[in-house]
Length: 330
Image (cartoon, rainbow, N blue to C red; front, side, top):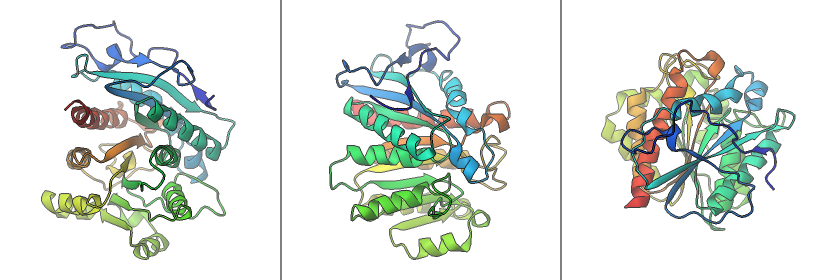
């Protein structure tokens, strides 16, 4: 049985059920599923599963603005309003949340890892909703454990921060997840291919830039790089990273975007990536055919304005799932 796991028991879309695929919305067609149901057998066809990670403990430890614990609920409310474009060819389940206010971040990350493994065993493509960026390490472990023993998992992160801080003194938090991934890969005798898009120099200290400079498998483009480079030059850089990889995990930290586009985040960004540019990059990554998992994190509803941030997160999910479904169905 999965720990710290709670299946969804209520509908978060306050509207009628719609059988007409031409007018339906996600909230009208989303079904509910209990991952602890032992009678379940692997699903056929394109099946997505929404799972929330209701924890911002790592944000609190990292002295950020708490509130991302409410992110999964806010993003769901916006996903529910999306138009349904798939008829009966695609199925979406809401499988619930990982939640445990009295448990440590490490325990919740392990619980998420187990839930992700269960979803892959059932043939369900996870749509993971954070939560703080502590979500990422649990998600990464779940994907890595679902791959073939020697297969390497590469990581792309849209983020203003490297999130490569050491954690020997503070313990894991929202700024350490990708360092934990690097250490996990090292323990497996593997490199840690890691590409960060949107880094802000004023948000990362020299220790982190020095760590990256000494790690050949890590590459990044700053927010200024993304602003100044041509679209094709950016895509070429991404393709260089993708070239020798077989499996990509993508994490979207909503603090990558300027506060005008994403005010409701754990750490606001005065500068930031244009969401329209980010969408083009996300679609390019998904179209590579190598993307096997993604999450959206750091939506902090108490600090949001008119659901701007949760709506943007849902919009990214809409377009990523469009491409992933097309690849499965074609």
